[in-house]
Image (cartoon, rainbow, N blue to C red; front, side, top):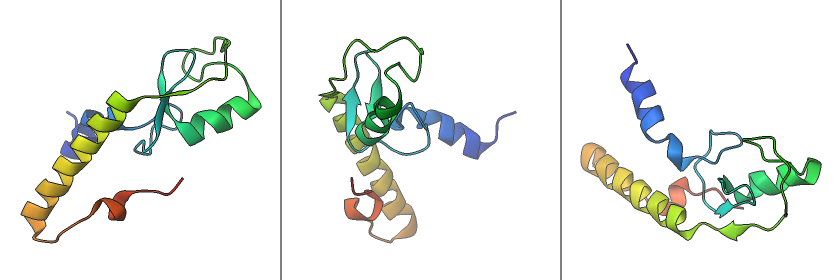
Length: 102
């Protein structure tokens, strides 16, 4: 049976960006393979190799386009989690507390 902590991690894994799968995306972009990644991670990846991190197929282009839908969904979910945390702990959190600078 999966522990509560692992179920929570699995539930929110979509917030993370494909390559490392550990960090919440703050600047999600869509690469030529059609998958969404954190901009810093995919740019670093493409400096070393021009293949998809998920499929290992060659990338036809190094163009990245913002995934605004994913960014909005992530922000909504983070805001919801902050509100739940505030309600539970009585401690006010802010977006700056959880945002990593690029």
